[in-house]
Amino acid sequence: MNSSLNFVADATVKGRIYPALARHQARPYTQAWREFGQHWPYTTPLRLQEYCEQHSVPINIFSIHDVLPPNAFYPIGIGFFDFDIDYFELLDDHVQQRVCQGDLRLLFYYHEGDNPARIKNRLDALAQQHSMPMDCYVFVSANSAAAKLPGFVTFHDFELWYYQRNLDRAPLPAHNQPRERDFTCLSRIHKWWRATAIADLWQSGLLDNSYWSYCEPATGADDDCPIEVDMISRLRYERKKFLDGAPYISDELDFDQRNDHSVLIPKYHVNSYCNIVLESQFDVDQSNGCFITEKTFKPIKHGQMFFVAGGAGSLQALRDLGYRVFDGILDNDYDREHNHTQRWITLTKAIYDAKQHLPQLFEQCRADIEHNQQLFQSSKAGRLNTLIEQINEQHR
Image: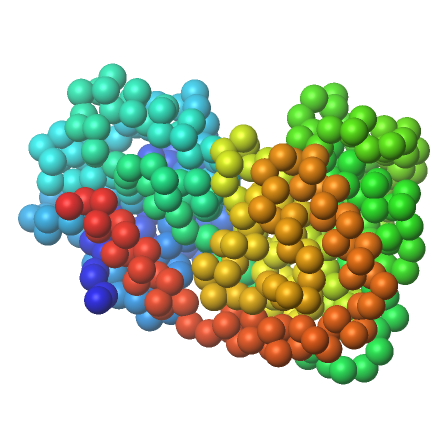
């Protein structure tokens, strides 16, 4: 059953809800409008409003001075959750009053995968500090662990984000012609776990006939790598040798173009059989959840098999969304391994096994690949209506 989403806004400009709490000033459909997340307190235009408009899901927008329906939310889009910011203190007096009265709740919408339990602890402390009801907010997170917390809802935002940003690009064909390369494995931004992963694939020869990149040299201390590098023979030495030669570039794009989701390099999808996705996080902020981004949805839209180097349960999250992850064809045991080092070791074995028979495996996966493309291209109204019901359920 569909239910409506009732937003309360300080102001709307050209139909867009003006970002809550923001100090930066801009108008919709300008470059400055896209830069709110770069300015304190890092609140942003509401992606959820854009998605609802794009997929024809109606929403209602009220003023803070209106008579409000029972399930009314003051939406706060978060670009970066800063634990040093007191979000409640930044609320307008009228908003604070109505939240304290219980006829309005805050709706935080966060597209990133930060540990939701830590966020909940911070927001609960702020609610107590400001004498607000402990159930005064609902938090939407892209981390799957959020679903286990009261007042929190999981929503895999980047499926809709990549759908929106890559809309003008038709899905590439899952053709049946021979492909020159085995894998595509791309890394835009340096992270120590990614350096460890690609160096391991590189030194083992698994990338010898592949498109691969590592676009930044190493920076900072190696104090945040969930893969225990010394548990894998010679990997510390091989990683240093690998990083000494960085960066490794496989295209002619600049940094901004690589972060532009409308840009597509067809060879990465139509001329290799399988995508080794290096997700944004491998331990997902020690949350025991998963966080799926556009990195995974690119091969889904553009017709490839894939492995996901990400949090445990990433493949299960995709199954829950209706995607097929080539069970019984690729070895997906790695997705159930919660020890990060063992998950990586198990994944590399699966990649090695697949490399021996990639053309045959691709044909076996063809029906699932085409199913995934069709599902990705379909309307997301059902996803959004489910999210709205989950948000409203938290209000009851």
